[in-house]
Each structure stands twice: as structure tokens, then as C-alpha cells.
Image: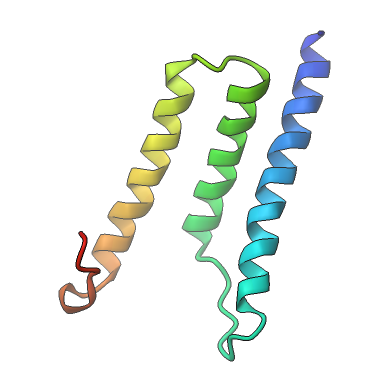
Length: 94
């Protein structure tokens, strides 16, 4: 497979994964009177994670840097959430 073919497959998978996530979230918000969008930082992290998942599947399942990227993006979202939620409202499992 050429590099451009690999990139084409990888970008298609990444786009599909991200679109499934966003479509699912929006469908959950359909009956919500507030109809919240995902915060930009969550949306971007999910997009980056979808890109890394597509690289894991299409390029190298054993690339530890891709797995570390997923962990890093998840940790960054968690840090932002922890700072933005008042102490009294933090989930019990944190």
C-alpha cells in the first residue's frame, strides 16, 4: 500500500469514527431542552483520539506513541474538567 493510499484509508476511518461520536452525542441531546454541544476541548480531544485510533488500526497497532497520545489527550480533558467543576460538584469516583 502506498503512503497516499494509507493516508486516504486512515483519514476516512478517522472521519467516520469522529462523526459517529458526534452524531451519537447529538442524538442524546435531541430531547434535552438545553441541547448542549460538546465543549470545544472535548470535541478536539475526541477528534485527535479518533485520528490516533485510525493510525493504530491502519499503520501500526504496536506504536506506543499512539497509545500515549490517547492517554495524554484523555488526561488533558480530565485536568480541564477537574479545574472547571467546583469541588462540591465533583463526581464521587474522582
